[in-house]
Image 1 (cartoon, rainbow, N blue to C red):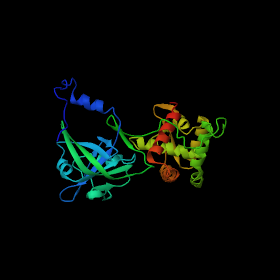
Image 2: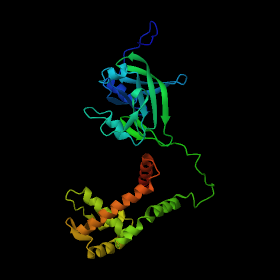
Image 3: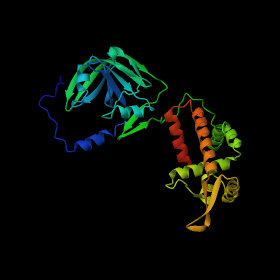
Image 4: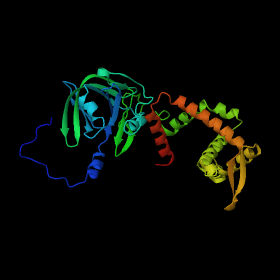
Length: 331
């Protein structure tokens, strides 16, 4: 079935390529959905789609489209029901899996039974369980109109977005007016420097005992952490770092770090060597003992961070870190 066309009128031939058209469409940011159904054998079928939109409130109608050449076309064209899932920001991997070819899309994916037997995925921002009301063929796609028989949403979820060939998470442009507002003249509770200090105290409050238990100061811990990362990035697994670079990365003065790494060398945590390219410079690497302590503390730090951010969504935590990195870089 095809919709009626304006009599006697045709469009001009396009002056752009299919690639140009696709790239231009990519400038329109969309949500990401997975549409699921069951085939004649009762097996679950699903695919990722971003061509989803609302049609009507009364009756409740939605639409999505599928390429005529799609291998699952017969399943959706002949089936009576399907479910449309609006993905949450932490479901990027699921979106990629249901868009991939040659993989078992349903392996280890939990789901329940929806209206008409359509599989319902877990953890989505919203779901629409639809009766396959009508279909329209246009160009190389078929447009499916579904009549929603049941819908559900997860109010706390943030949506997964797609724009220009990449996935994104949303970030409100306006402040949340439902959050408590501080008086404009209240300096201590609103000044960025003070808030960052409070946040730093909250982060380290549950971790400083672990640092002290290893006989380290906060600066010594940061030295081991920086050297740990340098070793991961180095091809020779040593990752030697100059004292000057260490001082910059651990947020301390070079004379202080010079004395500190000497004490750490005496304790067997780091090794010191002259820079082959400049004998006046001292390079620092971790010893086996230093690497052992660093690995143990990093594991504890990650666990403590996970607990601290457990009430935050994945995209909130990612956004916080991204903005802190920009602030630290002076951007």
